Length: 190
Image 1 (cartoon, rainbow, N blue to C red):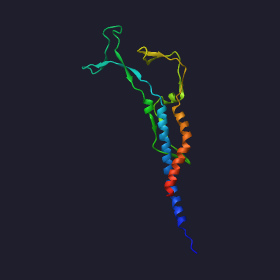
Image 2 (cartoon, rainbow, N blue to C red; image 1 turned 90 degrees about the vertical axis):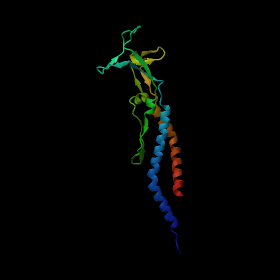
Image 3 (tube, one colour; image 1 turned 60 degrees about the horizontal axis):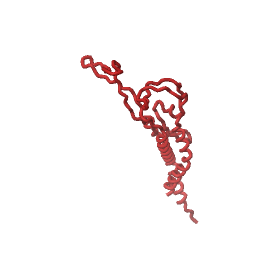
Image 4 (tube, rainbow, N blue to C red; image 1 turned 180 degrees about the vertical axis):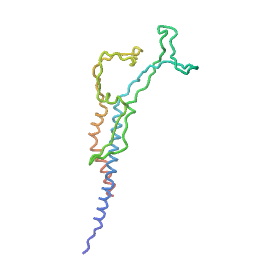
């Protein structure tokens, strides 16, 4: 009486393939989750309607090579330096979101960094304090067409774009991981 061990050999090969490609699949799933988080957080990141800044009109002296500011020759601003208000489109904070390409492994935990290096990101995310009544000369008021505004609130609430996106992704993560693992197991078991 003979015993056929060919099915057991096939099963051991499948188990070896599973253990060999396990880390690769987990890192691909982690990268997919990070890409989804990045997409969500970018959608939630507010974009300003345009920042204005003062640009002084200047010229260069041909003899010395130094910059000279042009002054108004007439009108109520006679003798004062000319300036123009230049509108800069927003979106710096939104464009600042990045995903790290490396998948970090800490024991059984896999991590991918999603971050923003724009210096004011934490203030927009978490909110910030300010002094009400303080005059800020760099803020352009489109209603009046002039520079300078007084701050009105003592606390500016945060937008929580990363926190809300993370919470939303955590609700979806289980089904995403299960779907990818099932696809991977179907491929390996063939």
